[in-house]
Amino acid sequence: MHEWALAEAVIATASQLADKERLREVTEVKIKVGELQQVEQRVLRFALQQLKTVKFKKTRFRIETAKAKLKCRSCGHQWFFRKEKLDENTAEAIHFVPEIAHTYIKCPKCNSPDFEILEGRGIWLESVKGVR
Amino acid sequence: MADPRIGIISERLKGIRSIIAVSSGKGGVGKSLVASALALSLVKKGYRVGLFDLDFTSPSTHIILGIEDVKPKEEKGIVPPRVHGLEYMSIVYYSGDYASPLRGADVSNALIELLSITRWGNLDFLVLDMPPGIGDATLDLIRLIKRVRFLIVTTPSRLAFETVKKLASLLEGLKIPVVGVVENMKMSRHKSIRRQVERMGTAFLGEIPYDTEVEESIGNVDKLLGTTFAEKVEEIASKI
Image (tube, rainbow over the protein chains, first blue to last red):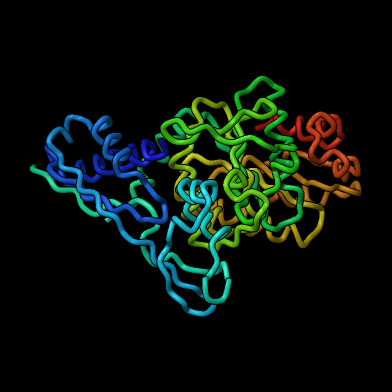
């Protein structure tokens, strides 16, 4: 239920942004979820529904997944993260702290752990729309 | 547009009365030992205490405290396990015995992630074992936790103290409270560090003599608490 903590963060930040924009009602919240963190969308959506406040009563939560693209800083090779290649414990560790990927994942070309997560790391709030 | 994790950090820490970052300008001054002994001393005094090892690339408090085979509980986030009477959190739960080669941006991200998902509950003190220097973790902490206070550890060496002066001056410039400076591994009666700290307008919290028994007590909390080192840290704990 790590997704619950992330959903709380989404609601808290979306509320702050809505207040800043003086939105009376939030109609849409667009969230991007990186594949590296392996967030279960079903659980995240459920948590968002449970946690939403009055302002989010009619909100449509749009969740998009972004592929996790990694780039080796040593040889420049780029590749996509694939969960299937990891054992259960490693996948779980990366789920909680995506940076742990540097502990277990190496560049498939040169074996360096020094890579950059170009996109698809964790959770990101893309937009908050509503009526004033 | 926005990183949602940032907005929840203050909520996660709202049940904590005092947050103390045990810091130093340089490595090897005994910061992790002071942080661990300080957390244990506060538990001994009856406080509710958390210890968070923020030295992500070289964590060591789990070795000092002999912590093995425990994991945080998943409950709407993660709840640190209670070990030796304190709520203990470290990246080693996830990295195990393997190296975590993290660059600055990764350290920041891991710090934000753990601060946003860890549920500490109600604590009197949260002790943070910081990585050495004025790097990403220190700057992020200042940015993310507005009410953090720093406890700075030095040794009698000029090499350590020169970096302490830089750290203290940075914190002063940013108006971040410094609880005081601790002089660890003291081997002489010289009062030079005490005098310089007081001249800086910072509290001098105490001297800890170089204690050869400390190394022998690593991994054994009862033994550690029986050392002169721990006795001195306990005196310091009453001043924070």
